[in-house]
Length: 198
Image (tube, rainbow, N blue to C red; front, side, top):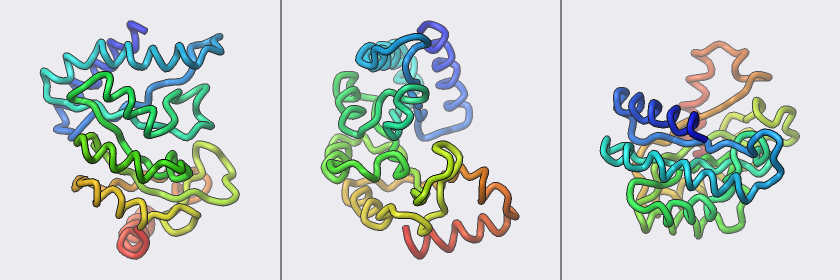
């Protein structure tokens, strides 16, 4: 845990140097050899508690990014907006969430949780892409906006209605498709799709 705390303190310093709006935290999964997800989740709280003072003194908000439950074991044991916001409420000022549609689009309480976060000023980042059917790789097969099943316009509407006015970041991990294409074509497609479907 201490090595992770030290890494995150350095990440805060780097985010400050870059002029970032917030530091997005992908919180990690189960410790090696563990099956205790409740303890892993409590370690997220403990770790964030340990770095929050450093982040606050540097005016760097910490954004928990809840990841899809398929990543609970190895990448992030915080998997819903509600859970992320519950942790933020325990930690207090200087914390919030990064909303990545790829990870949260399926959540029946998404609209409610976005409104909850907006009411408390906890919407710190917004990421878009699309969920392909079928998905060929759980990490590296995200879709271009409009190519999948996510109701992007609806979710963006909820985000904006909740008071978020920051960047809408395109985040497409796509080693099977978009990473193989000409970067100019990818960028032009991102712009067109952002205007037409997001």
